[in-house]
Each structure stands twice: as structure tokens, then as C-alpha cells.
Image (cartoon, rainbow, N blue to C red; front, side, top):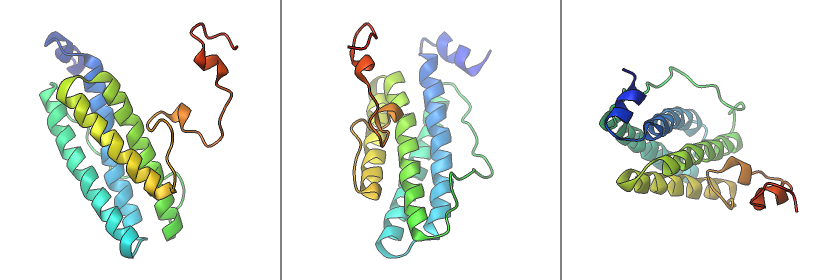
Length: 169
């Protein structure tokens, strides 16, 4: 019996376990990323990065327990992660931190949709924290944190998305 099947057999939504595993994987990557970028920062930015690193470690540890509570085996961290760009100076380190927070917000958005009760509240709190950190790092926020299609830098023509039929107005 697979983990997802076991979760469904207990009457829980298997999507919740998948979303929790994805959030755990994102937290593993965030802990790694902050470990890389922290060495490029000094002063207040380094203090903020250390606090974010600690927050991601705490969320990761909580998600390990959550996945077990949902009947799953927590996904393990990779030995290393590919960074989206070289991190050779403080500016790149801060950009990486913003990317990490955006990506973490995305997976918590999925967990908010999949979960119910206290887990949904915890996921919403994690989404909010990631969005606030990303906004501070970028100097601006996005209208819908965690929703990549809404967070693009260039607004697309989303007229069709607004209609119930999908037909452009």
C-alpha cells in the first residue's frame, strides 16, 4: 500500500500528504539556499538571513512531524541543490533569498488549498511569513503571494481569466 493510498484509507485527503511533502522538500531547499547565501552577507542582512534560516529549519522540522502524522515517510533533503544563478556577492545573495521565499510561498499556497483545520492555518502562516520576507527583500510585494501566474513582473492580459466561461471579453 502506498503512502497516498494509506492516507486515503484513513479518510484523509491524499492531496494533503502530497502538498505537505512538497512543502517539506521546499523547506529542505530553503535551508540549503540560506546556508549558501548567508556567507555572502554582513551586518543587518546577515542577521535577517540567519533568522530566516532558523525559521525555515523550524518549519522543516514541523513538516517532518506533519508528514508522519499524515501517514507518510518524510521526503529526505538532497545533498545539494542547483541554484538559479551564481551567488558571488551580497546583491546576488539577497536576490536568491527573494527567489527562495517566492518558491516557498508557492508550495505553501498549495498546502493551504489542500489542507483543513490547524494544518491549513499553519500553512497560511508560513505563506504569510514567506511573502513578507520576499517583499522586504525585493522592496515590494505581489498581489497574490504564492501564485506564480499572478506574481509575474509584467502584467499579462488576463481578461480571459476573469470570465466564468473562459471566453475573452
